[in-house]
Each structure stands twice: as structure tokens, then as C-alpha cells.
Image 1 (tube, rainbow, N blue to C red):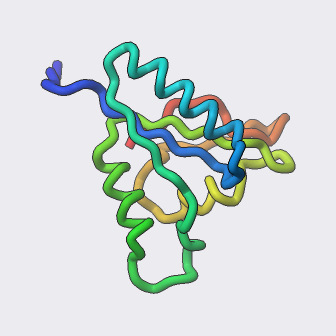
Image 2: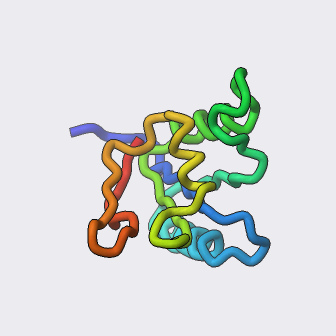
Length: 120
């Protein structure tokens, strides 16, 4: 059994750019709750994350995403459903291939992302 000398590190990612984003507000509320249980939380703001394949070098926003992924021991993704799928913002973040998802399944009946816990 592994013993840690720090609180659990949880990264929150949200898939909306709107100023009054409910997925962001939900992530902030969830972070507030788990901080009450002793976890350390951080957020990744997807603004300025370039589209995968549109740049050749690794931009600072991608570096930030990768560093936060490596820091985290657990992640919570909060994204609105857009026409039966996750948003392009969330899809783009996952395509930067920073080993966030060990598995990603779509529910066949509803087309929404299954409620699985994903660990980096």
C-alpha cells in the first residue's frame, strides 16, 4: 500500500468558453466540496489552447496542460453535451495526447460520455 505525504491532487477541466459556463461553475463547486475533504485542486482554463495539428511546436498552453496532468492524481472533466457529444474544446484537449484517458467510452444509446473516473 502506497502512503502519500500530501493531499490528493485533483485537476479540474471544463469544456466551455462562455463567461457564465455551467460546466465551469459545476467544476468550481465540486472543487470546493472536495477541498473540504482535504484535497488539493487546480483548474485548466481551455482558452488559448490551439487546435491539435494547427501548430508544429508545443505552445505554452499545451505545456501547462501536460504539466497539470502530470501533477494530478485524479481528474474531473466537466463538459456540456453538444448534439450528443462532448464539446470541441474537451475533444481538442484530449487529442493533445497527454495520457489523460485510460479509456473513453460513449454510451451507445444516448451518445454522451459515460460517467467513468479517469486517472492520469
